[in-house]
Image 1 (spheres, helix red, strand yellow):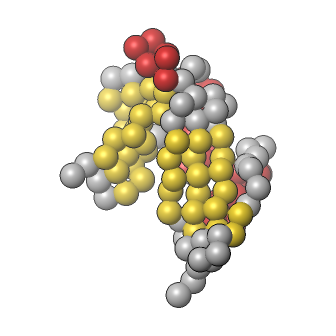
Image 2 (tube, one colour):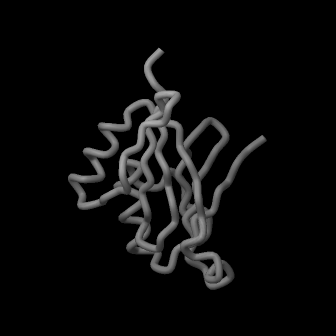
Image 3 (cartoon, helix red, strand yellow):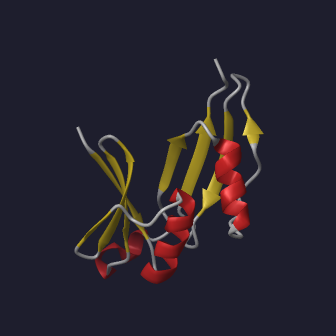
Length: 114
């Protein structure tokens, strides 16, 4: 099974710059007006600013499991991208929410070292 999660945005130029910083690279693929970042073997984040998606701008919520949370947060901070409070859950998972310019929520979760 493949996963394509659409992040509806209001300004493509602004969003492509922001998502390029978030993922640390430009889009992996462009199909028509959609820009895609591959985030797993069969998982993609799709940035789309078409009018047909305008009612959904800012409404996405997604969580990424990561192994390098501190490095990611440092990269984001170096580009002026902030985040919510860093939480540590009772099971040791560290979690933080990052909002794109439209308010879409991209959370990062790092499991404790085994």
